[in-house]
Image (cartoon, rainbow, N blue to C red; front, top):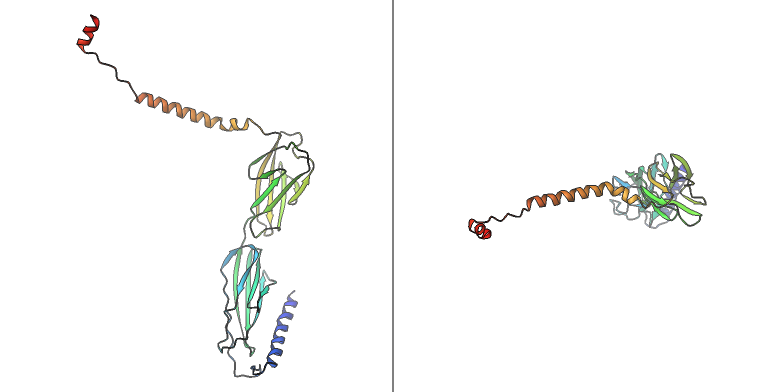
Length: 275
């Protein structure tokens, strides 16, 4: 791959030389009157999060101090020592850098003017990894962390599937499905004929999703035999008791503060009542 890259650069230089030699009035490479190199310009932010959409890098602001407009752009990039294939836009002044993997990318732009004077600019960009965000279904139920999934009444087969929703990991993930801390299935999409609960009343499951950078996310869920109607009361009995006690205390306090004053009879009223 590196050999192909150098061949491409050499071919560009050769083509530029041939073109210059056939353009009337063009400055020859042997003409020493133009010795000022062009100025390469492009910007890169320090870091970005990984993304399946390539990053556009723009070198069109590069210029020749002598005012020549016929610049030739030669781009190259490497990632961890490997050459990165770049997509070109328009006249080559812009390129597309793939940033779907986390790490540091080095990007170089060499600009040639019509006299074959050249200058090179190199910049780096760090691509940050993002843990995969799991989007999954188990049978007929969407899967979330701590989901409780009842055994379906319909017969199989059932689909279980996981995806990563963040842009950097679409279609480049691995999935592992566990039950009771033991591996059950590998792969992100399966069609199962037998519901994995068997004769058990419940079973603990874990889905592990791993992206191409080695980052992983997990999601825990529970399979149950039937939807347990007693789950709601059991979970809320302690809370209900607290609420009842709080209500009783409130009523008692209100009653203690609301005292009806006793009627104080006068002596004349008492005497009249006795008669």
